[in-house]
Length: 125
Image (cartoon, rainbow, N blue to C red; front, side, top):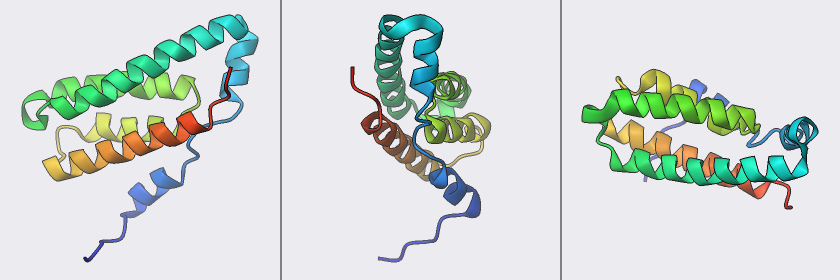
């Protein structure tokens, strides 16, 4: 099977670190360990739901909602140091109206992978 090389912009996003390792520690300093743990649990739950929601929405009919949800995801992911996920969410936010269905699904796959990679790097506790 022939695989086209990633476009330079896509490659740059994939080269972003999955997670900024000091983001959680900064949050702990700001709101304490219990608060950080609680907020992180909410973030994980909401992010999983949002990533699943994207897959239920038809791009042509819901590109405005998809862009709005991507904006929220970008902000939340950035706050938790999920650098790659935030960058991919920004891409979705900015291109939702122009993407084709195949590109949309590929971007969602990359967002799922970025989220999974960042979760594996999360401190336990």
